[in-house]
Length: 482
Ligand code: SF4
Image (cartoon, protein in one colour):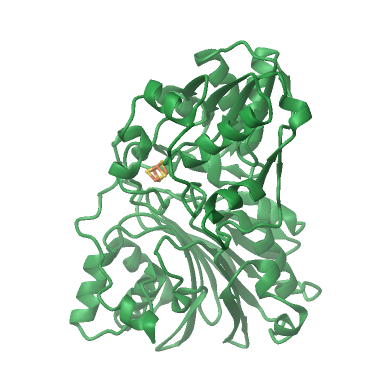
């Protein structure tokens, strides 16, 4: 049996963040309830903190904390938020080792003309340089949040421009890397997407009110209608005069994260013209064409392996079935007790339906292998339940390079595909066969995408500058001890 150690974060990738904003033009709309519901629709993008800021009479009111929508918000704290004109919402996953409460978004910052509320999804690759430059100029920071640095840049540019639109456009020129943001000023709701378009961002409408959201699923979940994606390099400004669009740049090579289609996004979203559910099914079909195998049943690892498993089954004619029950009541990074807590947590999270797999040759589809721990565990529990053969198919290519743009991948040397060949890895996880989707196959699933695509963590080719230096927080441990 595999000797791979089980990682406490369950060896799964973590989404970065989800952003949401609403500009109310209808008196009968409850902006707090709708923002709350919209964040439920984006919960899959981050489960470590959540927040809502409402702007009423140009003043911000916030409820935010560590936790998920269902644990942070309640009727008591939400009733303290006014039914104002503009809202900004955020769900967050942090890639740092500690939970930085001060970085919980929306970040509300006072500037010369009032308050900004900022919610961001993405990683600024020149964050260390900008932060250093601002600190050298005397700025002080409450957190390591990229949104805080962006807020500082905006407020600095407002001094020169006296205009929020121009200040944000100037800020966009200062920033490198990935950011999809929702920002409120005292009278405006603003959405912006970096010139590469790494992270999704889209625009919707509910009656006469406007919605900006990371994904279309959140717009539809509150009864709204998807209008269009925010273009790479575009800034949308909504105020009492309606909606205006600005562009900071049209020159860059666009580069939407391909992993949105494999894992990050919800299957009922459409991103830059591609339906996520159909993209995942297509991944399954291509995987069968690239790596067929004789088997009795095909099943997926919940949740993002399920659609790809249906695609594999459709292409192969092998019966699709549910083999796993996922405990929905366990969080993404649950705490446990006892020496064997990590393995027990994995067991609690996924249960095999013994009667389904016993005596069967099983094709099991998962979205990725990062360190290999979870894959080894899945093979083990399938075999323990009586599966005769276990053939693992992965609906993405092998991770062999880091992501600099917001997905929390480990360092290259910690990725299992950099340590073992596919054959060795197959043996390590105890499977009877193992195959990954090809790079060409990955690009095929996003056929019809309206912008360019990023596959940097699979190929090492990035269409944007890599960070030139690493940010080191010299004071974090001291702050956490207090
Ligand atoms: S490097 Fe990988 S995870 Fe990061 S943006 Fe590109 S495709 Fe997505």
